[in-house]
Image (cartoon, rainbow, N blue to C red):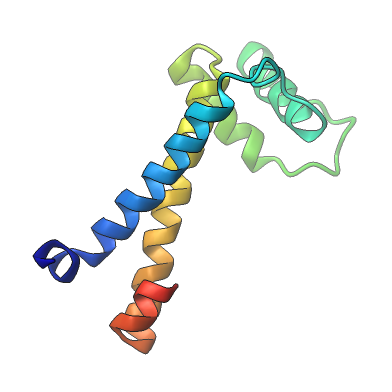
Length: 116
């Protein structure tokens, strides 16, 4: 119980990351896991194009530019790995949980931090 009271945000982060990684491990076995669909295939295409040409396809201007840029950086570091991209997104999601908990804790108290 000391860990919960001393490092509450670390505990929130660890639990959130564990849940996300368990989900990632479960869906990674699905045959369509490595085949992006709908918007994901567009972002995958943009990221690959950015890596290969340094340019972005301007024909689909309604898509935001920052996510494909982020994805291309992940792909550069991981030799276009969809699994790596999803793992980094799991990490960022867990950090978001800890951040929201920190804001709630600071604004409304410890109980609100746990609830958030």
